[in-house]
Image (cartoon, rainbow, N blue to C red; front, side):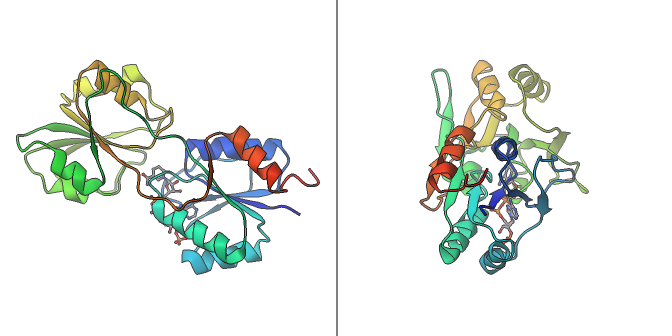
Amino acid sequence: MPRILLLGGTYEASLAARALADAGLEAVFSYAGRTEAPAPQPLPMRVGGFGGVAGLVDYLQREGMTHVIDATHPFAAQMSRKAYAACAARGLPLLSLQRAPWVAGEGDDWKHVDDIGGAVAALPSAPARVFLAIGKQNLAPFAALHQHHFLLRLVDAPAARPMPNCSVVIAKGPFDVAGDMALMQEHGISHIIAKNAGGQGASAKLVAARALRLPVIMIARPDAPLRDTVETTGAMMAWLAHHDALRGV
Ligand code: NAP
């Protein structure tokens, strides 16, 4: 009997969960457990790491998984690499469900950098007010830049102040352009740093930056293993059909 492990933590993963549930497929939704109140899903859920590749191989075997869908965030590179290795070890078909990266359009002022270090280096030496829209990880390299002030937008309130030179806003996407423009104006933002996540839920800040003529430092996605990749749940269902996962549904 086909049984699918869906690796989540994104809006796309929630859409995928809905599509799998609606199709009556047997599947488990997996969260890393990074946020305090993960969104409920219409599938059985598990929370927490698997314990590396070996732990995931064990889990796949124990749970009788036949297919894996990696719908993690494009910057969750470790999970994607481990899923790739575990599926190779178990001989299971693996699909990446991932939104396309954002592309700069007319009126955008984007500077492309390869990684967090590149984003640190791309900031001006003069004091700036930076909307650091990268979540709660990787803040340390910015904390050392005392001349700048950082606006952080986080899902959960931090237990301690994440860095000395910051303001924190607690909010969960999707966000809208008017709200993001107001936020940037209120905080006198001069630069935006973003991860190239793609998708609709977090793109409002880029439209707002364009409207306010603010420069964006755009961090490129980390390298991912070469695997089957789709952008929509419709294409995901077609892939599942092609890989014999709709048997008996
Ligand atoms: P990561 O660095 O790629 O993964 C670190 C470890 O977390 C993995 O090795 C795995 O632990 C565990 N893990 C990650 N995703 C998991 C999942 N869906 N189910 C079970 N275990 C998982 O991941 P990350 O960048 O910290 O992201 C963590 C989660 O937040 C992901 O689910 C991702 O989709 C979501 N997220 C990430 C970002 C981002 O910018 N990175 C943004 C929005 C949402 P073991 O080795 O023990 O199995």
